[in-house]
Length: 162
Image (cartoon, rainbow, N blue to C red; front, side, top):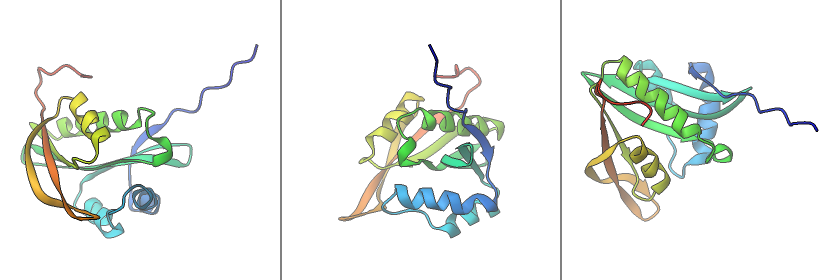
């Protein structure tokens, strides 16, 4: 009896300017209102953490984190459509939370669309909680959509993973 070989493990790594064409391709295929190439360039120029999850030469997803002044902000987390539902977002989010801790952030914030329940469930499963709303934050087909603001306290006493 033969057993099919396991797929190669996905690896996490920091992104560079040379990776942005692959990032923007995933971004544009994943969102109706995607970030621009300039936004990703600006994030790298500002020293934000831009991390990739890839297998072989294929980009599975990426995340962007800014950290300063004891706080971190998850700015973007995206898994390519063909690779969703396989635990990649959990792995990438865990890495970004670890990076926030490495930067000595006491809490991490993010915004999420109310129309994205899968993302909200992911964040809730990591212990994020809703702390506010930003009215009309996101562009939407019918005008604007609010953002749910979520936060996670990053204390030493927390158990990891959740």
